[in-house]
Image 1 (cartoon, helix red, strand yellow):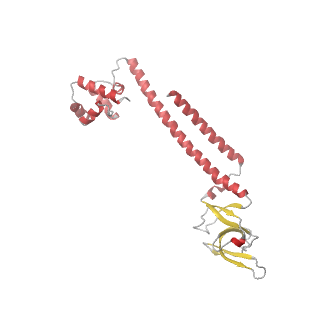
Image 2: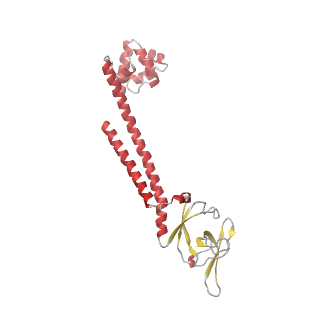
Image 3: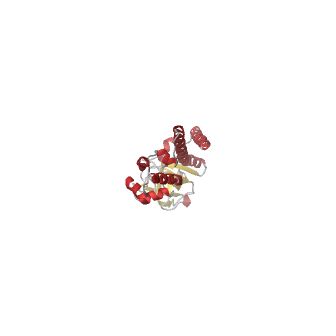
Length: 266
């Protein structure tokens, strides 16, 4: 809107009514400073005052907004349509911008999804690393339920007291299970010199059995918080990955078409 033109029109109609700024302000329940600001083009009447102002000046609301008299009914209708179209275009532009922002967030979410699931799976395929999820709360607070962990292969001679390691348990109660527990002691056989480790969970204490180079998997290298929540839909399926990419491209293409159409209208 042209504030200066609106202000000049209000001033003209006020003077035609032989009304001072103070009197007009009193009728509207505002200060004469506000009226002075309108007439100098430094602001515009609040939408709640437009109808009352129009009645006082004996003009239409549209004439105030246009800053001119509109005697021709056809021109008045055209002016209304023009004003509505202008506002509609602005609304459509902001809707499109909001849609782009929302879809950008969705895109980042998809990329985060891919990062969490594809990258660990790629790591799992490397010969010296493995990816596991924490299924029990026995190593809190270092490892929490549903965390993902990346385990790096390491020689048993390099394992130190307090390290968190992954191993295949040979204890009677957990035989064959993969555990991720802390090293409690590091010992060697007096006859053979073979190194073996005693382990424990931080919550339940010492494990049964022992760890040798044969059942040692590796040492904890990295923790990925909460990734285990999504384990049932881990992306090994290439088809699901391709579908996600198609969805992303489709969304961005539709956004581009809509933005292009809005720009044409503007």
